[in-house]
Length: 96
Image (cartoon, rainbow, N blue to C red; front, side, top):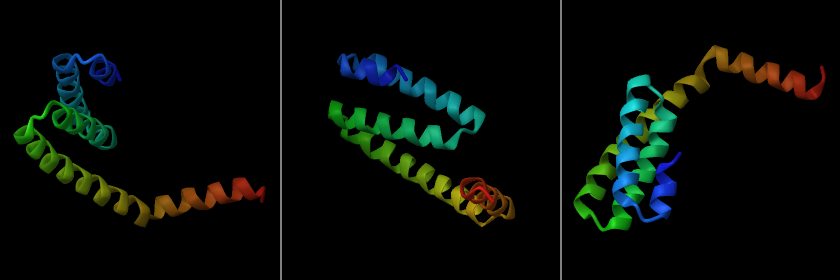
């Protein structure tokens, strides 16, 4: 959460260090949605800094993780448990 603040303050080294730390932590706990968000921000930082080679590498890795996340979401949407949760939510909303 603090990396974008550092980026706004033009402390690019500090922002990059925070993004890298967040990436390591998020990978270790398996938080793919937050990892993708962090990778997008880090990619934008590389573009902002004009680090073309790093931006290309970060884009490739980010795209792989976005595909992983999409696959995981597709699996969840197809699951019986998801159908049950959606049905329960609809019942709550409709009051029935």
